[in-house]
Length: 212
Length: 212
DNA sequence: TCTAATTGGTAACAATGTTACCTAATTATA
DNA sequence: TATAATTAGGTAACATTGTTACCAATTAGA
View 1 (cartoon, rainbow over the protein chains, first blue to last red):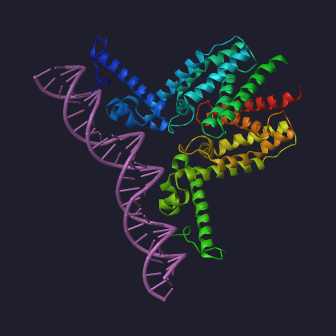
View 2: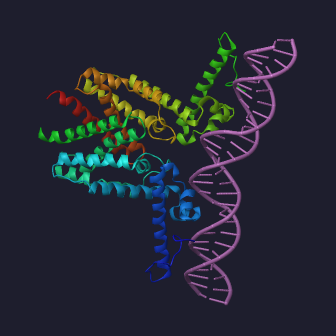
């Protein structure tokens, strides 16, 4: 028992049952934050159940009680990554010109992949081999990506659904980022140039069709 | 000692030194084939050093003597995957029309990802977390992909180098296949449609620029 | 207050990559 | 040719992981 694992303190719950649930929820969030900081500091391989428990100063049992399997913790890291990505998009200044804004959002996605590479590997790079996103995880990504989807929807491009056009953009951009993070694209500058060309191709393809 | 681990038999080497090298090379290839069959049959998780040794009826030491680390074996599986991919491309009937041929090669790449998903995951999906392709591996991929590069080169599209345009195509297609294999794109039909749209986008973007 | 259920810790299990150590065979050298 | 050095290969262990069986203590409900 320590600062984390002590119910009844710092709570406004009226019953002990509620206190427990609050405590449990608080614990969950603490575990996720500890795992996330391990991920940021030392990369995906460093996120082991034992190490998380060590940093929490508790036994591994607690993690299994809260998340069932390591995969359950991975799911929370996925959602945490979605929140980070969503914030990056929200912090992107937009112009109102669809072509330019799509380019800016694409650049934000590239930055996310570079500056939060460990999260990217967990979310989309298969760093935890067992983990496959469930419906909730994918909804988290849909939410994070919603600015792109909204942009496509408002641009009224063609007969395709904005959701799937947004996914087409995602997949193409992901391909460059992922191959780059996997070390299959040579130097960083070359990868960045390839990314820019890919963005240009997408913008050209989507917006020039409209003018014909 | 068994059928695999017996130098001096079935050899045409004049000296014992040569016989040893031939034997060693033969062993290497046997190990790779055993690992590849495990990969095909049971997926990447099944490819463990112990299981490969078991199927070879030898100790794990041999694998470490031949490949240093498991990563070394992964590299050979990467190259084997490149050969399979190269054969798929070679077996693709081409028409001589660049747009159509690019589409056919892209379809061959999709089929490779679906029918040799385990290889794809090892090569590009990070199934072996430790593995990063070295120069030789990437050269293997360049060779496998050379038909696409040659097609782009012969089409004489723009000022960009054919190599990097071919890589741009690769990255975009890889994005769809990889997200699909990672279970992040919904059903298979939807993913296939998304792939087709991506191919169409690429063809449109590359070949329509030329006509302006 | 007494019984049942839940929480959480300890220690173990099984699987894996990897290596230390030993044996035997092979090669080189006197 | 005989002996020393090198090498190949097997056994068994080590460390690290995810995971679970078991037990003690605490808590909830009668």
